[in-house]
Length: 216
Length: 216
DNA sequence: GACCGATATATCGGAGCGATATATCGGTGA
DNA sequence: TCACCGATATATCGCTCCGATATATCGGTC
Image (cartoon, rainbow over all chains, first blue to last red; front, side):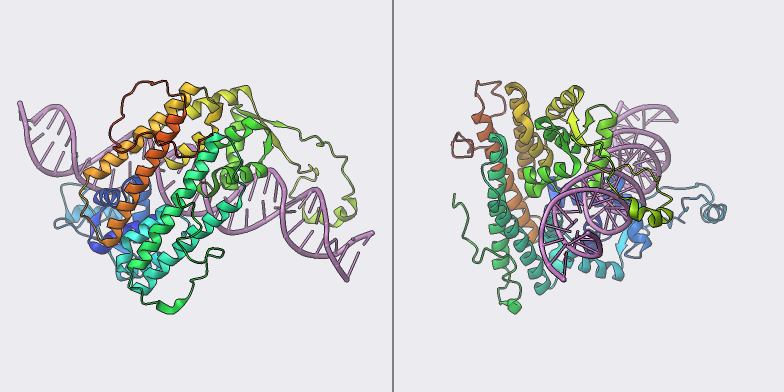
């Protein structure tokens, strides 16, 4: 999830951690307040598996003093920069080809994310890179998940709980309904060339959209 | 967060873990899919600090029906387990007085939760136990958080990003606006004794349209 | 040249999740 | 009757993510 965000942002341009965090805050606003406690480990993870790589930020090629503080590395560091040890400079990261592939994969993957608000927001923010068909797939799966949620919620008895719980339920259903209409609009906004009329049914009990809502 | 949910549910009646998970799923629906990996540790935590206690579920001391015939063979293979056939029965938990106090405290606490969807949903679901004043405080803080988010979002330039990102932003703002109106309706539904008429601005077109859930 | 706030990287403990293991219980049917 | 199956139930493991915190560097400013 975080990896998707990082790769998506790095697709545009190389960035370092601090900047990455700021951009992500701007892109997703209140929805996703990333933390350094997840960002830096995620960066190391991605670098380790070859999805991103460090690009020297204009000046120093920092010789990577691996966490274990090995004598060998330190010696090398001293040879290159005699005076200052462990100079902590900006480390900008760049997307590799492998990382690009991974990004596309993550955008398309359906791993329990069709139902997840944050993940879908992330996918939507970066799906501009995707080819139209894959993008439509993402939207369609999201639509199916929302429709399913709505149908399931309607099936449960409406009389449960106290005043507050009932209000909560009703409000949530309305929100889901609006989300559904929004995704429908997004789908309609795609070049609706009827690409491989595949999973149009998927959502089950609700055939045509714009129907079955409380109609306010 | 999970503790709030557990205590809130146990306030009504003693329950065991499995049931707890199911109830929570019903109460919060799609918003909160609890996991055993968090539930059982949380239960132990709460039991350890005295907020809940185990209550024997009516028939604990089962007189050990005949597992004897199989035991001879299997016992050898399972020696790593203490051969004490501690019959694994339901362990129901009950709220202690201390736990009740903790629940009230968690419901009122403002620890970064005013801005959190799930936490607010949880608080709302259980705030029926609270006295009216405290309840109004919860609602008011939530309202302030939403208004702040809206104001902040409106301050940022609206032209950023591609088509999808812009649509995402717009949709999110509309959602926040609706949430705000909803909370306003909830507040209006309380005994509106005009408590501290402070931040009434900021939302704009939200007067009292009594068209929400709590029409009772 | 000492100080300060913004920038920047990093780690730690804890919470929550998904997957998985294990055990028991109530039926169903052969 | 009893073998099996699916629902019920408790528990743990490894992981990701978060909030708090520590530390270092940089650009001002007085």
